[in-house]
Length: 204
Image (cartoon, rainbow, N blue to C red; front, side, top):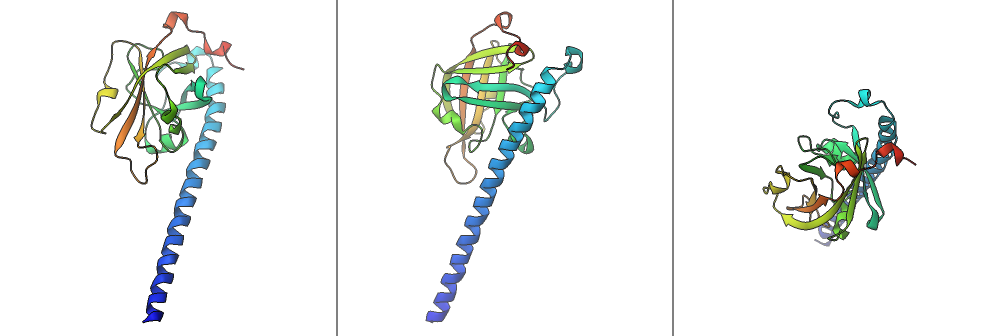
């Protein structure tokens, strides 16, 4: 009886260790992919911004870096890809196709994972600046509100008349498995397009 109990305990311990090793390996892979993705995006983004306007004409392709996102108070700099599918979001925040580009009138939607690139959103405050830069200019948005909604709530995705930025990630930030809710940061454009500074002047 004791031998059987010991065998079961050994089996259970082995399962726990194996599961822990799996989670650790998965976590390491996610972190490595996100860092490599951001490093590649920075290089590709700078190369794209130095191209002639004619070569940049037309909508961005899926998986292409489209903007640099900064939150100055939090010391955050991220490169945003076009697309919000799984492979895109493993590399960095994704601009949702069908929503406006940074600086345009309307709703610009950017999503990212809570356990990597958008973990920083847990520390965002009302009044914080969120800066988006691309070939069209440098656009400063100011955080107006944060909210927690259900995944079925499509309000953050709806078109708007004014220039608005919605950053979306899963919630709670610390949660094992698929998080049941969404955390939304809503910001309004502070600088009009005519007052923006062309991004190539900002490269350094």
